[in-house]
Image (tube, rainbow, N blue to C red; front, side, top):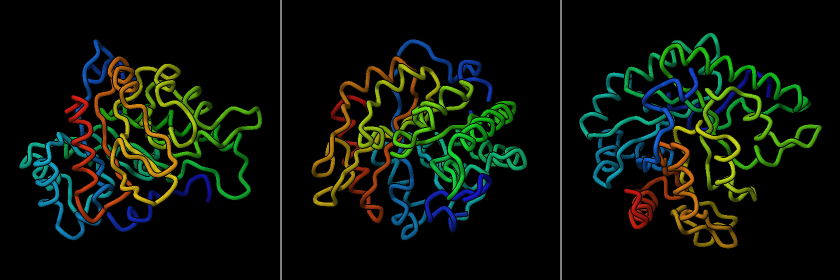
Length: 293
């Protein structure tokens, strides 16, 4: 993969903020406030394809979710997305795109589209964030940091935030001096570059999600609430129910840390049951049982 190429997950191929956070009043760190709960629509991608976006978002709202994060737009324009959200009392708290969508050539168009349906947070979950075969990681990371710093600066002028979302590799890949990809990236990007930590992936990578908010404070508009598994045996992607042999996210320890940090959204993402609502319903109930929604 070249430095300029990108891909989301395969479904994004078909489904056609930045001043620092502290500089934007509505995202500024303040006294601890409990984050609102949203769902990443990738969690129910097949359900949406089978039932339509309108019906699906009505179901999401009926469960009790307050917001959604997009990963593809199901053929809708910004005005149509805004109407569906407004009709169901939902807000857009983010979107996942390939990194190329906030390149210098496309960032204005991308921001204008997102602002058109009420979203300010634009995040890349992997597409274009890793070197291709034969590319040197050290050199790639220097370019990637420059790319994100520029994107965050450009998007910030338009009122948007740019962020990076992790899987496991960000904690496992190391530069020549032994620094992990994750630590190099967030140590060298400006505080305007947002950290959308997927606490499930961080946990299964053997790292502590809570520690990341100490190392890189007050730059997390949202996080991904997820439970992963190392086996498909009984694993349904429901919060509080990791797969066999996998470590559970330490939710009770995490909540006060993210509240103090200023995280505004817990975005539920489930890796199972994409054709129905079971995992997002049960995950909502889990957070509800913890007094989070």
